[in-house]
Length: 399
Image (cartoon, rainbow, N blue to C red; front, side, top):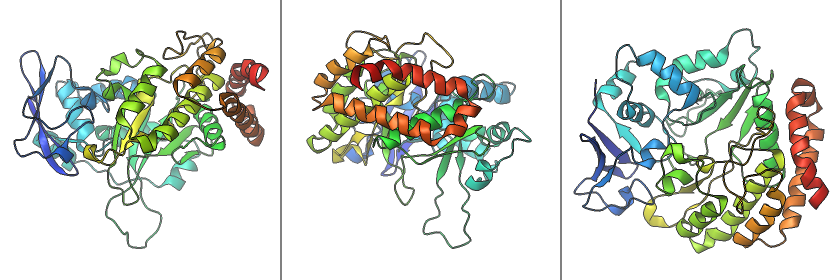
């Protein structure tokens, strides 16, 4: 089953097709495609095709990576050739992050026979750990893999707990993550870091920690109140970069992209949020705040209403890689230790007023959250210790 052509659509209708030639990937808009049907802020509707040697970044954005990709290959390798087009058809056919859907009759028929009944949030959160619920969920929903990331994660439809008739037939989705044995305490780690962001006033999606602290669960943020898709593009896609280039560029380049794609009315709040998010990653020791972990939300490309997406995927990495460095260049340096001075230069890049006060606010939020959850120190002392060690130089400098 080798796919050479896939149909691409947005909520506004059919957009075009992605095709493979001998060496290239081509995206071609339909002749009657209208400007709102553009698939990316950087790929406006035009007669000329978009040609690349590798898959276009907007299509790479949701392709599975790491553990999930390995599991998917194990599931499919005996029967099909697991190439980028098949992965794209799988990740783009059900409920991918963002507003772009990709269709293949072959994959659609394959998924039609699959059961995706949905899961109850309360049952996931109260799972007692007697069996590996994450492995079970991944097995059931892996063909619905419309989300990227090296960390083990799965996108699961949420089953409503009420018997009342729904206003809409569309269901919400839960992003479920597990550190598994490779990264002990990772669910607690992300819960604490995301709680610090929330406490500091950084916009974040709704998130939860399972009672046994083995699963981190987050609601997707690229849907409106009626569960209709909202445009989302990560910074790698916006910059025209492949997923494997997510560690290139700099935080200043993200600020430049915010100025380029966000209208004036959203630039100030987006730049403030960007500064706070980068500062928080430095403070908590997050060496994985790469280009794919920042993105923009928008209704559709012609509306000029893009703004920075809520913060997501914030974790301390020094608990697992003690000598870790920043994912991207900050004022000419990737050292977490040197980032104290780098943040002040980055504040200038983002035209931030009173950056030291913003950093102090983050440090206060960190203290409040760690004090609020003493039980997590008992369950994952190495994680809490790593966060405190990362924050200590900032407390000395800015406290």
